[in-house]
Image 1 (cartoon, rainbow, N blue to C red):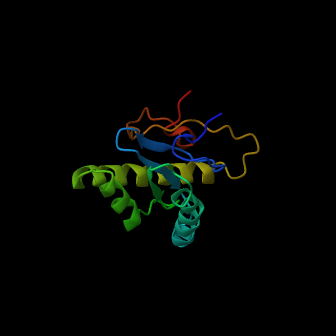
Image 2 (cartoon, helix red, strand yellow):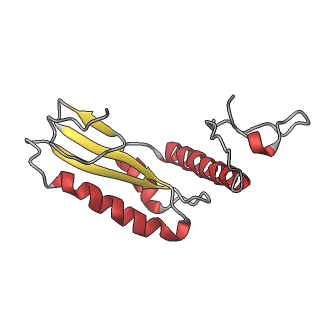
Image 3 (cartoon, rainbow, N blue to C red):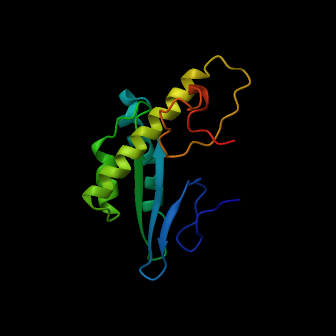
Length: 149
């Protein structure tokens, strides 16, 4: 069972991930990644911020706690908040551009596979890789793009 570090604060929140520095007593709750439809990005961003704000006001035993909430649109849109979060983590502009492009592509691929299988009652999800499939004549059919066996 995954649990948030008790030395930072006691919480019942189920946090996807955290970054912690015990020497500087700093904890980043997140990255919490959400992939809503583009028209819902701002409302989901606000919901996630409010959810994790409880960590900021708990008895954190001299710890500095920060929230890191990222959104990528289901059709690949990357909002400005995504880039600003990566900048706060110390990524430079070329790295932010690369990560944004990779996340956008992955969101598009996932949405496409979900759409292809929308009527498939026995759909078994496969792990997608970040590698772009080749477009040679020996390429796999679209339903298995990026999947691993």
